[in-house]
Amino acid sequence: MTTLLTPREILDKLVSFPTVSRDSNLDLIDWVEDYLNGHGITCHRQYNEAGDKAGLCAHVGPEVAGGIVLSGHTDVVPVDGQPWTTDPFTVVEKDGKLFGRGTCDMKGFDALAIWALVEAKRQGVTRPLQIALSYDEEVGCEEVVPLIEEMQKHLPRASAVIVGEPSMMKAVTAHKGGRAFDIHVHGFEVHSSLIHTGVNAIMFGAKLIEWANEMNAAQAAGTPSETAALFVPPWTSTHVGTISGGTAGNITAKDCTFEIDFRNVPDENNDDWEARLRTKVAEVEAEMKAIVPDTWIEVTPTYDLTGLAPEVDGEAEALVRRLTGDNSQNVVSYGTEAGHFQNDGYSTVVCGPGDIAQAHQPDEFLEVAQLEAGQRFMVKLVQEVLA
Image (cartoon, rainbow, N blue to C red; front, side, top):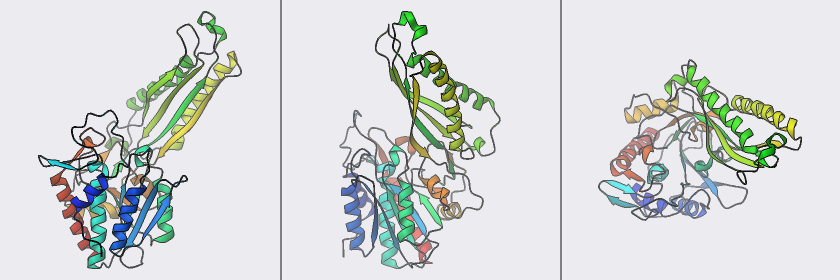
C-alpha cells in the first residue's frame, strides 16, 4: 500500500507540478491517480481534444446515489513577470504562511480533498464520497462540463457538491456568471484626410465600447433584483480591458480588436446579454457597410460561465454550515465551476481554505491556519459519511 501522506505533504507535491493553464497537467494527474490507486481507489479520466490535459474523478463508498463531491481545479495562472521572492513551484513556509503558486487557488483544497478521499476509503463509509479534479478553470471553467458528463458515466450520481475555491472556509452560496467575446472590427483603409470614404475600425469599435459604458450606467441606475442586491456591484457589468488596432496616425484603421465581457448576476441569462451585444454589433456593422460594403465585425465567443444562484433549503449549503458552524451570508462577484454543477442539477456550495485576495498574486500564499481549518473540516466530513 502507498504511504499515507498528510495534506501538507500532498500540497507540496501538487505545487511542484507547474500546471499553468497553457501547459499540460498530466504529470500531476498521473501522480494523483497513482497515489489513489495505491490506496485501492479507482480513478477515471476525461481528456481534452489534444490529449495533453485531463480531468480526474473517483468514488469511495457504496455504489449508490446521494454522495458528496469535492471539486477542485488543477490549473494555475502564470508567474511570468511577477516579482516572486521564493520558487513559485516549491512550497516555502514562513511566518505561518505557505508560499507557492496555487497554494491558495486552489491546490490547498485539492490536497485536502485527496487526503479526505483516502481517509474515507481507509475507514469505510456508508455514504459515498467523490472527487472531481478539472483543468482550464483559469481560462473559462468550461472544461468541467465534460468532466461532469464523465462522472455520470462511471460514478453513482451525487446529491451535493462542495467547490473548494478560497472562501476562508465560509459558505459562499452565490456568484456571478459571465460570457466573453473577442471582437474584430474589419474596416477599410484610406488617407485620414478622406475619412468619409474609409471605415475606421477603431472609431467604429469605439461605438461598441461606448455602448458598454451605456450598459453599465443603465444597470447602475436601475433597481436591483433581490438576488442582484446581494452582490457588489448589484448589477451585470460590461467590460473592455484591452484594445489593439491601427497602422498610422494618418490612415483610417483597417483593424481593431478587443475583448468584451459580461459578469452577470445569476438571475440574468448569458444568452440575453449576448443577444443585446449582437443587436448592437449589427447596428454598427450596418453603418460601416453603408460606407464600404466589404467591411464587417467578427464576434468570437471565448468563455461561458454559469452563475451560482442561491438555493432554497440547499443540501450542500446545509452540509457546509453544519460542519463549519458558519451562518454568515456570503456571495462573490468572481466565477467558479459551481454554477456548472448547479446547472446540471447538483446542490452546490463554494467553501475552501484561503483568501481569494491572495489568488494570482506574486508570492501567493495559504495560511497554515487555513490549511489546518480545512483539515478539521475534512475530518468532520469523513465522520459525516461514516455515520
